[in-house]
Amino acid sequence: MKARLALGAVGVGLGLWGLWLLVDAVQVPALIRLPIWLGGAVFADDAFLVPLTVGIGWLVTRWSIGPDHHRTVGAVRTTLLYVGITTLIAIPLLLRQGKGVNPTVLPRDYLRDWLLLEATIIAAGVVVYVVQRSRFTFKRSRASSGDIGGR
Amino acid sequence: MKLPAPPTEKSFRSPLHHPRVATVIGRWLATAVVICFLTGLYSHFQQHTPGWLHIPSRPAELYRVTQGLHVLSGTIAVPLLVAKLWTVYPKLFAKLPWPPSRKALENVLERGSILVLVAAMALELFIGFLNTLQWYPWPFPFKETHYALAWIIVGALFVHLAVKLPLIRANWRRTSADRTAPAESLPPAITGLTRRGLFRTVAGAATLVGITSVGQSAPALGPIAVLAPRKPNVGPQGLPVNRTAEAAGVTAIDADWRFTVKGPQQLSYTLDDLRTLPQNRSDLPIACVEGWSQGARWEGIRIRDLLQLCGARADSRVRVVSMEKGGFYATSELPPEFAHDPLTLLALRLNGTELALDHGFPARIIAPNRPGVLQTKWVHRLEVIT
Image (cartoon, rainbow over all chains, first blue to last red; front, side):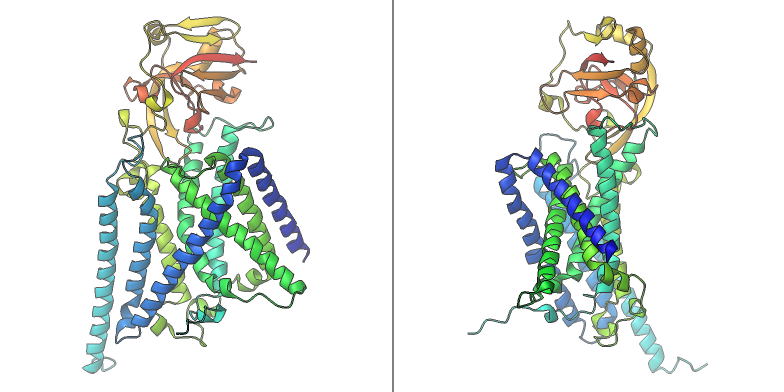
């Protein structure tokens, strides 16, 4: 209990220090708009990003109940997740490309690179999917032909 | 028509919304946060060095590594934060205890601390990432807010750990369920994802994001850094630029341009004079606060030689003055360790040719282990501070 109280006290102290830094360095008009941005960040996470992930996860799990789907659901789920997270990071790059004054910032063709990246992730997912499926089919055909445990 | 009931904590049936999962992902996220915080603190002290602190000028590549890690750990924290929030998402719908009691108060305080933690961390990662794109769509100053929020995050994290300590203790160690799904829930053959599978997927997502962005700090991985806002070899003379000459309000120099040193003796040089002084070569990186870095070959006059020429003491501190109009970095200070380091130059040439205007023509500072913003460009005066 003492450790917890100490941790909590240190935490409150550090947080107040941060708050003081904020009040000290940021002008009042900006400071009163900061909570809107903080709230917006929570809203983006809790009302959009996470529900989206939960929703897609639910759909994938529902789909996985179908015949044989549970063998390959891992590949589908991982591919969707990787496409999602890389797209999330790519969005600001795509929105901002060509808008700044400094040509050495965002020098790539981000649309092409993003499409290539997603294509690579999906291709890798398809390969894993096919391998997992064929492995399953192979096992099943061996099982049905009495090939397993027979020798 | 009756609307469907709002979700409750029990609506989320995946066994992966479990304290053990939250503890493991929390551990990873905390590691990223600690690395990000410490490297950020180092960068802050580089730019605002308190009197009691002496930052060494070696290892020459230290800042390159720490700031590369700062941006990398922040970027990797994005998938980790999403995973963590996903794991604990059902808690958002838990009912508040009623009627008011000590326990209810604790619960409200706990939720308050989590709200602060999530809000500060999500905004911090967002503005930090957009800063690497030099994009500032918000109404508050980036640097001050980013720094203050970092302390608030660390504070809220301590409070969070204090609140959750018993739960963390109970779930710190691996359980048999990390290999298989708990018996009371859907078998992994149907849900398809065990805890171990989830950990692997989240680690994979973090690795993927890391590999596709770290190339801005590690030039060997530059070609595949498709999620990085910089390519380390793109820019004049094979080096990116942070502040262009145009943005700094610097155009070509006049014929009567002079470089002056204000010390015990006053020195004044034309550009041709500077070129006839003893030249030295330093292989040093430009390591930007925004995380990108690139090694380069610089040629110019050692600052310590200039100090000697003007009769200043070897342990002098030097103020560097740029022709830049306004801005935070129109002047910088070289502490004695940096001014005296033989690698620190008033550089006139970069990668074999005269400095490009965007890289600080006619003369700029290049020193080891320093953020790019302090490698002052378009330098026209040095002032010795004793």
